[in-house]
Length: 417
Image 1 (cartoon, rainbow, N blue to C red):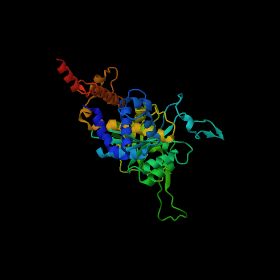
Image 2 (image 1 turned 90 degrees about the vertical axis):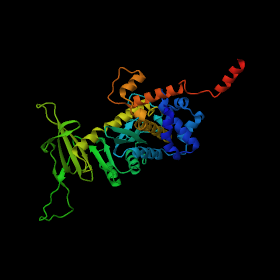
Image 3 (image 1 turned 120 degrees about the vertical axis):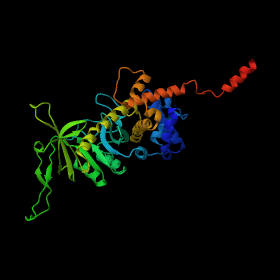
Image 4 (image 1 turned 90 degrees about the horizontal axis):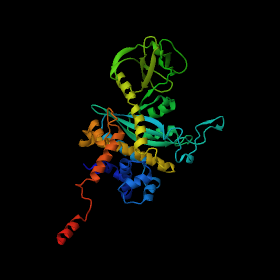
């Protein structure tokens, strides 16, 4: 099976975004990131890609190429939504690397986030910050997360700060439900998303405060504007009942409430757990503006939010998210966006190609010679390693004609005989 031709069929969907030379370099980047086994720097991609272009053409493709990374992300989103009808968004932020490591290019972007009492506590980033959007798609038997959009964040910048980057991404995507972590509990964030028409699903912090809707007696006349916050919600006093969710029986409670973090009414779902009867209850709170969602769906959606965290890890380990060695904001943003495109195209190829779709975990492990690792499902790293193995088998198989002068050699041997 020719894996490269299967990838090229999917990459043809992006061809209108580039000119002829740009599309050839785009395909070279995708194939180089996917098939190269070492660090995904531009040098490594250049050595692995089948393109005949010069090295500096690939550098200029990131810095001065006439293409837009945001349009590329929108095109990728359209490609995924073309094959999946049921989906939700997952939004989160990440750093390129963890503390204790040095990253190339940190000195090009000053960090103004840690200024306290007019003293800059940290002069530069310890890792570039990115905002990312994932598309969680549902099939009959599983949920698949596709990394779609990634944009670099520069703290303190008027255009590239966290809120403006979120607004840019949310403006250019179809309306839907956006799942976020509790770090985004901010009225400004929710106001931007709700004004654009999106729904939100977010986890509440442990000290979050909720209020019942205010019940107004029509016979009593009051001066001033109408109130909306009623009695404060006491989480332990909610009516809990046992429901079947997350593959088990859980004790949950639900209520329609107000919170000062969100300008609209939300549906609060609280799950309580405890180790034994001698310990106090622990409460897990999540709320959403989409009132049509059931309790089981709300808990399941937020549990699947973790898939974006694993996508961050896989793109950093296997798809060059943290291997860029370019200097400008434009080049870095384009490089990390290409790493997201590679990851999503590879996952989509596994769902659309019959031979890859039917492959089992045991078959992949046997092909790769792995006997010490038994995952429950195919990870992105195993997918990439299996494609690399099939590509090498195809390129170095005896059935593939590599030399064009083979008939000439046969004629020479006949004459000698």
